[in-house]
Image (cartoon, rainbow, N blue to C red; front, side, top):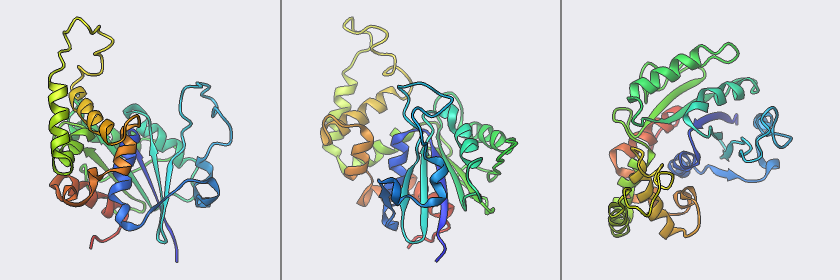
Length: 265
């Protein structure tokens, strides 16, 4: 049986775990050891540290997360920020031969741009690439049949401004309602103007999505003390059972299944 190769680029590690959790019913298993990675992806795994020409020792080596079942080999690449999404895709596609069977993107619609604006900017940038142009569908959330199949989903729902945290809070309201209530009370009680804080302390908290991110971090911190939010998304029930029936979560899952050309059962 021929294995289909799919490449998905997201903004950060939380988005990686969102995608992984929603695809878990397909039996895609995380590949942890390099020998287990499909040979198709070998050119995306750096052979030196730090990878040239970037000599920043604090920057994480850019290696995708790999998942595999009998039908699909999936690489999910965290671009470490919105500004690197198109560049990450261009760099990776220049190494992959032939092109993946599917290429997907997840990005946030924060307060700086509307979803359609973010999508249009990405679509133009990817189409203009000299070495590895990618043609997206006409609208966010839609799949161009290709080959390769392509699409971009602008979180939280291709229509409203927001981030992944908006979706996680909806999920927590179902999976962990009492914990979410306590986390919201704690965050609501924080006054950024309190003299105990300086501007640097509150720099992230006072951003448009700051309180939502803090609330998600509080919930995750109780579920997995001392660990990162992405660990909680991977291990806990944010995206299990009834929370997966939330309309906006179903829309993300439907996009992923369509991108991989898999029928939902």
